[in-house]
Amino acid sequence: MSGYDRALTVFSPDGHLFQVEYASEAVRKGTCAVGVRGKDVVVLGVEKKSVLKLQDPRTIRKICMLDDHIAMAFAGLTADARVLVNKARTECQSHRLTVEDPASIEYITRHIAQVQQKYTQSGGVRPFGISTLIIGFDKQQPRLYMTEPSGIYTAWKANAIGRSSKTVREFLEKNYKEEMECKETIKLAVKSLLEVVQTGAKNIEIAVMSADNSVKHLEIEEVESVVAEIEKEKEEEAEKKKKPTNTVASGSS
Image 1 (cartoon, rainbow, N blue to C red):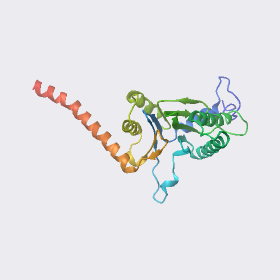
Image 2: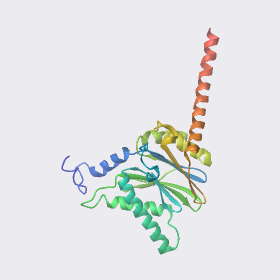
Image 3: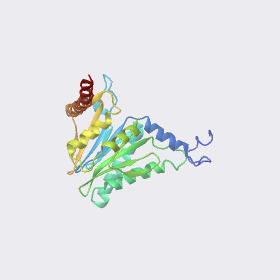
Image 4: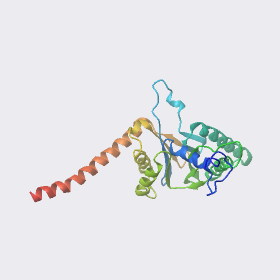
């Protein structure tokens, strides 16, 4: 295997490109990011690392704007993400200048995926160690796309990337409902992140995009109130589960 996992452009005998698989492993080691599509809203949620005491928190952003109407979250190597974000922003501006219209969400997703794919097929480079979640509105319809280090892009109703993404995706599959209102969509995004984030609201960042393409980054107090509401619901559910057992116990005595 050692000969095949060093060269990016050489397939192993069983059809693997090991460097691309290692890039996907770098994504799995990154912090978790979640995207959820609602009725007329799309929400991105990310797990933030704890900020060091002397660090300026404004310099650490896991959710970036590619254009006025397109936002992106990522999991994996932050430096790789910065390069890819700059390429995507340049393409957005180039599209505006050439066509005199903003780029569609699928167009810019396809562009990002093409850049990622190109870096799996050339000598002397390595794949981007990031996966992305891209949100926006096309013709007043909410859109959510994911790209992978291999250059694949897919559309989703809800998805997760990064650390423990499989657990979060399974949670989303169980709890996702069609045509969710804004509040419900935000709550589901926060709830799914709480599956992997143990420290609560201070390590969660939420961005909400509405049909008018405005993006709102929730303040820490707003995230805390959502988390408190979720915890209250969990306590109420736990109480409900306890009550029947208490009744049975008293009846048998």
